[in-house]
Length: 493
Image (tube, rainbow, N blue to C red; front, side, top):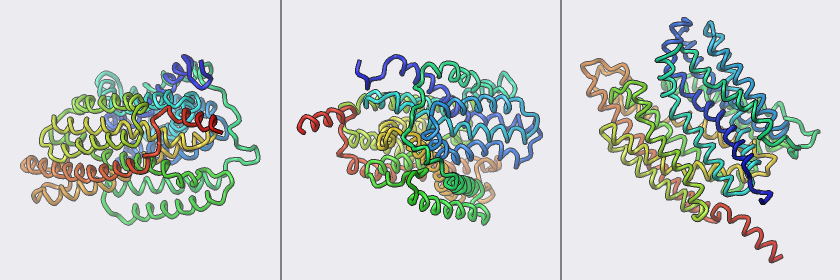
C-alpha cells in the first residue's frame, strides 16, 4: 500500500473523530427544547436563560482561532484529548447543575472545549488522509457528522425530555468523549513537530485581540438580531470591528501570526472561504425561518418539526458523500457551481412555497446543491496551507461559518421582521409568536411573506456565488489528479 494512502486504522480513527463532532453539533441544538423545563427547575431569570443558551455559541466562536493555533503549536492530539476530557466533565456538571450560574459556567466550559475539538479534528483528518481522493471522502464523513448533529439534535432532545429529566440532554456527550479518550491513543497519529520553532510561542496579545474582536462582534450581532437596533449592541459590535482591524494589522507584522492573512492573496483560498461564508449566512438564516414556519405557521409540535426536517438534512448528508466521488471526474468549479444552481432552484421554490411539503422540498434541494461547496470548499481551504498550519486553516473555515450564521440571522432576520411588520395587520404584534388568535391567519401569511423574501434574496446571492466559483476555481483539476500533474512535471524536469 502507498505510504500516502490511509488504511483501516485511519478509517476507524475517522469514526472515533466523527463521534465527538456529532455530539458538539447536537449540543448546539438540543438545549433549545430543554430551556422551559430547566428554567423552572433552576428558577432562572429571563437574563439567565439567555446566557444559558448563548454562552456556548459565544465562546465556541471566540476560541476557534486560538485553539486552531494552539493545536498547530502544541500538538493536535494532545489538545483534542484535553478538549474531550473538559467537554465530558463539563457535560456532567451541566446535567447536574443546581443553579443557573453553575449551568452558565458549565456551558461556557463546553463552548471552550468545543472550540478545541472542531479545528483540531479537521486538522488531524487532513494529516491522516494525505491522498486527495481519500481526504475528500474523509472530510465528507466529518461534515456528515456535523450535519447529522444539527438534524437529530431536536429529535434526540424531544425523546430525552419525554422520558427523562432535562439534564439528560447533556449526558449524551459523555460516552462519545470516553470512547475518544479510550480508543484515540491507539488510532490517532502522535503529535510531531509542527514546524513552529520553540522560540516562536503563541502570541498572547493576538489571542487577546482575537477574543476582544470576536466575542463583542458575535454578541452585538445576536442582540441586534433579537431586539432590532439599540445603541448598546451597536456600540459593542463597532468595538469588535475596531479591535478586529487592530488584530489584522498585528498579524501582518508577526513572523508567526495567529492567522496568516497572506493566504487571502490566493484566489482559490479566499473564494472557497468566502463562498462558504455566504452559504452559511444566507440559506442558514432561511433554515431558522423554516423551523419557525413549521412550528408557528404549520402548527407542528417541536418533535414533529424536527422529524419533518430530517428528509431535507438527509439529502444534504447524501450530497456531502456523493460530492467527493463526483469530484474525481469533474473539476471543482463546474461541480460546485452546478450544485449551487440546484440550491438556487430550491430557494426559488421556497420563495413561492405555500405549504409545509413544498417548504421541505425546497430546503432539501438547497441541501443537495450545497454538498459540493461544503465538502470541496473545506478541502480547498485546508489544502491551501502547509500541514503544520492545518489547524489554523480549519479554525478559519469554522469561524467563517459561525460568523456567517450569526450575521445572516441579524441581517436577514431583520429583513424578515420588517416584511412581517409591513404585511401584518395592525394589532398583530412585532412577531408571529405574539399575534392574537383573531389575527393569527393574517399574521401567518405575513410571516410566510418574510420567508419568501429572504429565500429570494438568498437565491440571488447564491447565484452570484456560483458564477464567482465557476470563474475563480476553473484552474483546479478533479480531485486526485493534482499528484498526477506533479509527477508529470517532475518527469519533464
